[in-house]
Length: 252
Ligand code: MG
Image 1: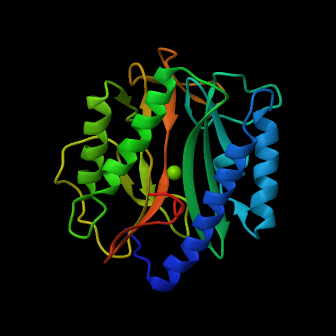
Image 2: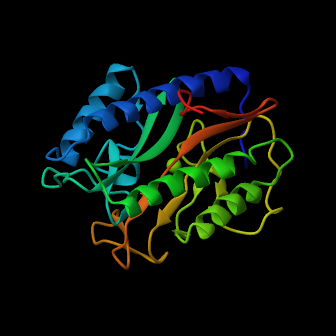
């Protein structure tokens, strides 16, 4: 069942979204060669808590961190660790959620560590652009899979590949609600978008092949071929006036 949100609920979600957006900007400002992902996790948790919110991911399904920190060929769900020290040329995907006033916000960014290769920058840019291609379809009356198709089309045109095993999702009082939002597929399928739907759209894009492996820790998802992977996500509400981005208000 898709749970629609009214104006009051959307305003509550905007507050959670604001905290997520600011926490991501804060984490991005800390990223540099020599810092550990454990330190980023600790500081992110402190930031979120100071805002009167709770990190959505901590303990979710047993996840040990407050944020996911996925370096280079790690696609998603990287576990922050003291011995994972960022190095010049790495790319770091940070996925971060915050719960406040009973509502969650969820977003992710891929951040270059120092100076990175042109290929890495192209991957990061392609992933972000793919999100915005999907966002263009976040309009009342469009089909859910119009978003999916737009994302896939952009990624394929760039010669990159889409991870299919993990998808975006509805969000609200629960971190993951219906509907699933795949990053691939034919247009014109699935439910039509309605006012008050709130979804997290999150393309995961590999520079090489789309195949992934899950490590023995049962969390860390890596590319099978060891190629770089990027992640970009925002929480978006469908409104009469078009898409309302709840975790990305400071640009575009
Ligand atoms: Mg998500």
